[in-house]
Image 1 (cartoon, one colour):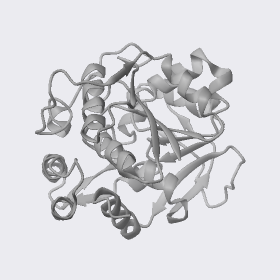
Image 2 (tube, one colour):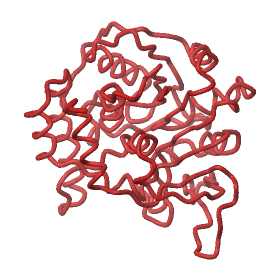
Image 3 (tube, rainbow, N blue to C red):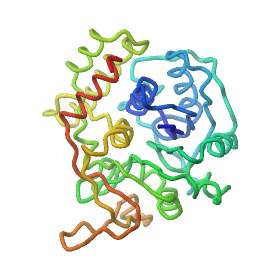
Image 4 (cartoon, one colour):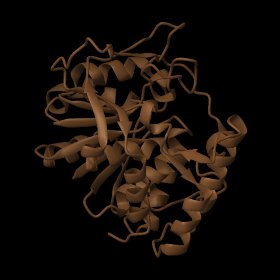
Length: 310
């Protein structure tokens, strides 16, 4: 599967990048970076740093959005992801990489339009801008996979809203309106994608990958935050790996096809709406919401990919 990734690394974004780089059936064609968990500039350094660790400094790292379409200032949360986005890890200030300007993403899309999938695990500002600047090309992309939303479950930034949709609900609606097909991995499933310290240490002990020294410390950092917020939690949910897992293992994720709207009003900002009543039916919208997944299969798959024993 050929993938163009939009992200804002961020610990779970970074684990998603690592998963994509390690997966034998994923070809990562480019990484579009933007604000979100950290600033756009820091996200760009982090993406290039991770690609470099894998010996893939050739992968284009494309500069995206610096702030949401509303023009608001973004608040960052170093207590969740660390001051530089990788928990206790400090990437070098200057990282060699294949840095490209925003328009370069169209070259990637045009050259792979028949089999390209876009994965967006951050605020959708950059992806919405891509539609705005070249709608005719972007509507030809056959599938887009998003991490975002919370459907009939609590949000993680407000009582109702998930962080990515809350960060730029206007952009999320642009993607939902114009994309040919959208697969969404919401908090309904990503909240349960828990990686424990024991799993991280097992990966460290079994793996010979260039990322083995990174996984335990970032998992520890991430887990510490979640355990502070929810003392009963035994690890941390790696939200942004789920869109990749769902694409590669669709039989293990239960989805429903429904029209989706993201609220933009201040009181309900970022709230994702869909008719999930038992009386509702698939509506032909090609908007698919992940509602349940097989955790045992997921964690087995995650370990297998991360230790590079496939």
